[in-house]
Image 1: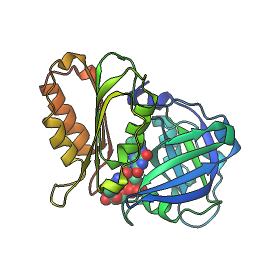
Image 2: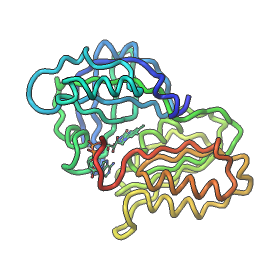
Image 3: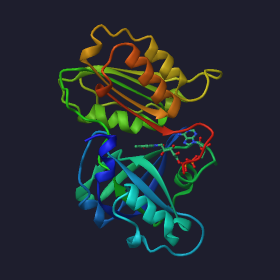
Image 4: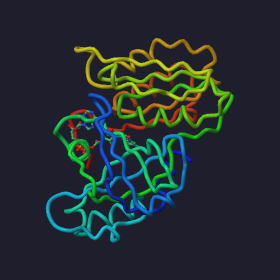
Length: 267
Ligand SMILES: Cc1cc2nc3c(=O)[nH]c(=O)nc-3n(C[C@H](O)[C@H](O)[C@H](O)COP(=O)(O)OP(=O)(O)OC[C@H]3O[C@@H](n4cnc5c(N)ncnc54)[C@H](O)[C@@H]3O)c2cc1C
């Protein structure tokens, strides 16, 4: 499975907020629950989904949402009346407890711009939402490689999920950039992993640039035996990929995705 295969994924799951909690200055955890979540497949690692949230007043027929968000599902959604009532954003499964029909989502609290970030900061028990399963982006296909995982705060849930689910024999380095040291969460990393937190200092540029600078300092002795995963602000993902290709990594071994773009809202 990879980000390219997400379009094939299928599955609409309805849920409600059960609680929300400020984890740290920069993160809010929203726990959602519903019978549907008992049957959500567990893909593990960086499993992600389309999060469908209500916008504006009025009721939403949640079951009318598409169960697939490939090109045709997206076009169908955009041309339906639902697009005026529902916003769709991308989020990661932080923890899934199928036996309780519960799932945790860790939102970056990035102020009052946008929809999902502000929604999470005011989420109340009972608030309704829906999820469309997208599978996972990380492919654990080269267990003996050295793994490089690089991201900003929006990718902390994904990188922590990958560290949790990798075989315990895996080796590598995780670089996670955060706005503040207090935003770091415990990592269940394999012993052969170094997890390095990079705290952004004022003046270190837009999010992602400090992690990118750190990545450029990493010496890769055998680039052909490295698998890389880059996620976060667009310039981190694309700049990191460019750097790694120039350093000799085969393109096929680099999974990269721009999670968000500084200064522009999701479509
Ligand atoms: C596969 C995938 C998984 C993701 N998982 C998570 C996750 O688990 N947790 C998480 O917090 N995000 C995650 N993201 C990123 C999230 O989808 C984006 O941050 C999204 O833009 C948030 O939507 P919004 O409505 O809050 O803001 P938007 O309406 O998209 O943007 C409004 C404004 O906020 C800015 N903005 C958006 N996101 C951020 C940010 N993180 N920091 C600072 N400014 C921002 C934009 O530049 C814009 O100016 C994921 C993205 C992808 C593709």
